[in-house]
Image 1 (cartoon, one colour):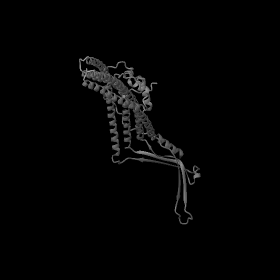
Image 2 (cartoon, one colour):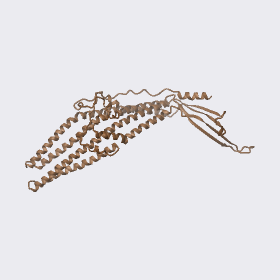
Image 3 (cartoon, helix red, strand yellow):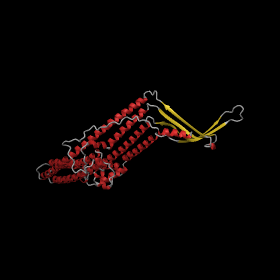
Image 4 (cartoon, helix red, strand yellow):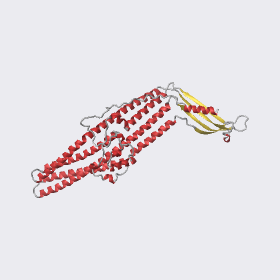
Length: 472
């Protein structure tokens, strides 16, 4: 009898049924195959490599040593990345737990029972009975005849893979965020240096103007105009001092510690080195972006949920079994003649569920449709991000060249205005206007340099690059 019971348990464990999962949806990219073309989309010059961006390690793009060090610190200390990594571990554990439902849970049990009955006529004492049992068994193990448990296991597995892709996306995003925060900090320092130089220049101009007033060659109006230029520069210095501190705080949060002194001492945006990456000729690279792949995994999980919802319409069979020993005394367990066993199969056939099963199935199908739309929406958003980054790459160079020429022209205009004022040809107002134009042009040039470097990082991120291994 024991061999027959064991064979029954083994057969129940190995029994496998059909799958009710729908056929996987055929996914298409609702975007053009080629990137946009036109005047804004100039080809990259001096690209770092001919490999696709998602196969280029971030160390090959970020060439600035200080920025590299900051990214390395962020990869170790950043709390958002740590949370994403822990979410992967949670999803993996949930998958293992769900997969475990495919097998019966065997338990060792021990039981003792004491019972006392009222005194019966003719009996001298109240009878007390004792019974003990011990053995192994399983309770309510569901045979997966229609694939419900396997569908739920597949759903959990796809969710786990989706979290893995989400973690990769978090890595890429972190590399970009640290880079942009670093560029913002360096740009703030450049703007602060410009404001300090302008302030020193205007203070010297004010002293000279006050001297001319004392000599009777200038009016009090000219002094006030010179003082207004000084206060404008002083206000700009205070503003950029604040922005520098705030940008350092933002960078410190990303890297999880104070900004190292060597990073805080970076010279200027002119010394920051970030390589350009090729976009390739096809938008198919977007299908390998981690966030796109995560969306696909979520869709596959939703499809598996449909299979589990369909299985609820069919009968379910659960098994409960026990094998062990039962005796009236504890020391009598497992002796000859004390063997006991039980086997209780149960079948449940849904007859009337008030529409619950149908509603669950409809909801599962709708969630799958939502996942398809989300997947397509993610691709469209990614295509626009890359297109915008390509337009930035194709136009920033020309804009910076024009802005640099404008700054040089403004500098020469300011020099000539100063000479004409000193010679008494023009009023101080002409010099003041020229100085403000120069200051504005130089500020705009610094911001354009920052935006151009940031656009390189953005293109790299939107193409799915940023994490192809440690690169060490």
